[in-house]
Length: 213
Image (tube, rainbow, N blue to C red; front, side, top):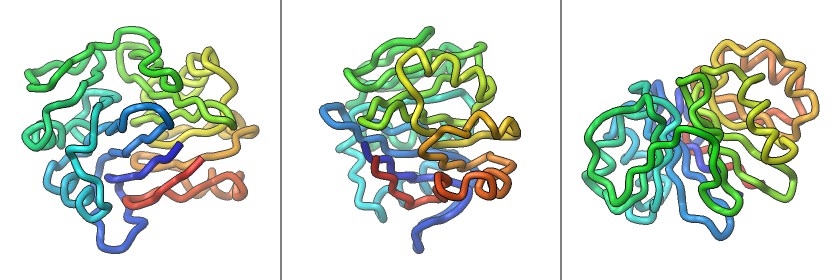
């Protein structure tokens, strides 16, 4: 599994642009390339993709975690470049989109052999779960339903290895005690505390960061 952070509040790779929002390219063996969320600004999204040598035409699917602008703002701009994609959206995200297929995800379901969605939790947000040799890696947008709730749903699919994405004001740090990977990005308010508690498993995020599992 390979995760490339395209859009984030911070920059990891020099030359990219930071902005409030999140987007990442998810690549799992024997599965289509998935763009997870689209950041806030289509110009920044597409510019960072170009600098990371990610061709929009290579994206086969788009997964939207929740309806907030900082995760959906780049969507229409991306679809102007490539609308030959399958779009997975939560029921709370409404609008008119030109895409090959649009799938509204109301509950947990297998998207591909090693990729599952939690479905929209608490009517707010869905997360993506990828199965790896080390366990389940959860990709989250902002974790609005709460990490404990997200973990409860995600554990139905296997043992949790790690998490990547925004954690907002999450403070129940002991929930990460047995994780092998923690990459707190975007809206996470307590990155320093998490890094100090778990220095061996904490991985810095930022636009341009590539995580291979």
